[in-house]
Amino acid sequence: MKLLTICKGKIHRVTVTQRDASYVGSITVDQQLLDAAGIIDGELVHIWNVTNGERLETYAIPAEKGSGIVCLNGAAALRSSVGDKVIIAAFCLTDEPVQRKVVLVDENNRIVNNI
Image 1 (cartoon, rainbow, N blue to C red):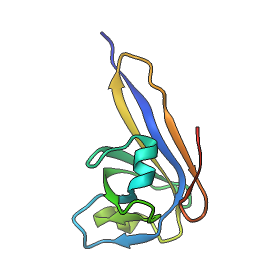
Image 2: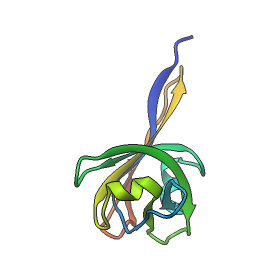
Image 3: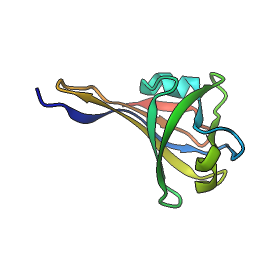
Image 4: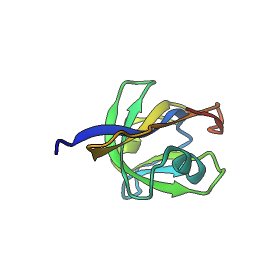
């Protein structure tokens, strides 16, 4: 069996709403966005900052559903600014096809489309 690393979910071009360098780590994301992308609490995620080109890995933790919150925490907070556009992506190892979930949002981090 050959396992491939496949993108399973992506939240495309969300806006960073907060930063908290003193928090222990992670990225806090509106639960509604996580659910739509199939990303669970504690899951490894890649963060690609479209505004400044930074790329990093951390883990996702949920914020209040419908809040629109996207908050980079800990050291990750130093690699972004409030207002930056980022892509949040999660991957899985599998030998089977994966139906990727892509979530598109508006400027307030509200879902406008699921692909």
